[in-house]
Length: 426
Image 1 (cartoon, rainbow, N blue to C red):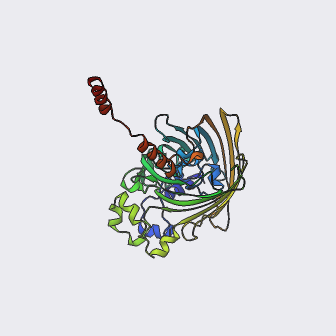
Image 2 (cartoon, rainbow, N blue to C red):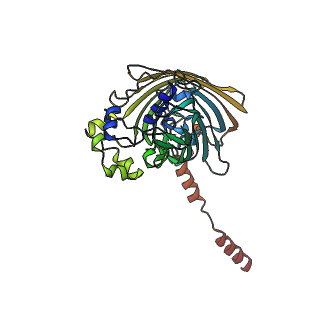
Image 3 (spheres, rainbow, N blue to C red):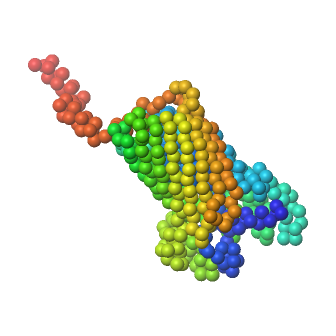
């Protein structure tokens, strides 16, 4: 049975196949990339929100959806450990482990460095050749490392970039199924933009976010036959937040994200050499208009993520969400639920605990329920200027600064030196 799962892995990572085979295993032309673990939402807060999070309030773990968010954190440093068992009914021990955190730079105003280390363990499986001869047991895993930098661009906006490294070891180095396999590794990048509309004088505000993640070249597991597309994904979304009290401690948030994988729509028998030789940058742009059935099919490839959260006294969080994918393009429909306990502890260190549970609904995919758990800590104290002081770059402050400068003109060192010389002389 386990060798069958290995064959399924081959299909899932999106290797090149003949047109006839492709039409049989993927009749709906579902865009398929490798390294799907890089697209998994392993943090409970966003998992409960239907995998929405590009514009949600920043927390320790969700910066991997939008690298620009962490500069709006109110604490100087944070670190979190996350655990997500996945599809354990298929292979025992399959799970994702992550360490995520950030640190505000001391010299760079509003600059923040974020980091993430994740390892997805596929468990152990028996390898067999075409004649079912036993080839041994192999433990498969995918490792990813990512470091990002984000900075305020203004009072309410920020931008960020990230560089990542991955190593996918699905089969080790060996010949299997008439192909030669070896571990795949490479670099990728993220870019993101974020607008946090919080204003302490208003009860309601919008956040907006947009990001492109996992930008990189083709993933190679061996020779040219064993290459596939990187899991480049475009994400855009908004979040509406409303406070029920004057102290801004009780808050309701509603999040809406849309995502699309920036990889070619499979063409089956009409696959062209132009598509095969196109650069990754070209593929990112052409993937918006390459579906055989035009705009209608392109829109079918867009996933929708809805999520709501209620935060009580900045301490207890209750979340629920829904992810919708078109029935012809994967049919992954999931409901998510979650709880969180925040800011437990003292002033020097504050702990967060979040958990979520997602189940498949209205879907034929049969994806197993997914549990997520994370434990995090904020430490190092508050930033000098926090997201609650969102007036630091405000027009009023800039105008006041200009008026002060005009009433007290700045005198250069050269002018001061000349004035002292004239005073002594005359």
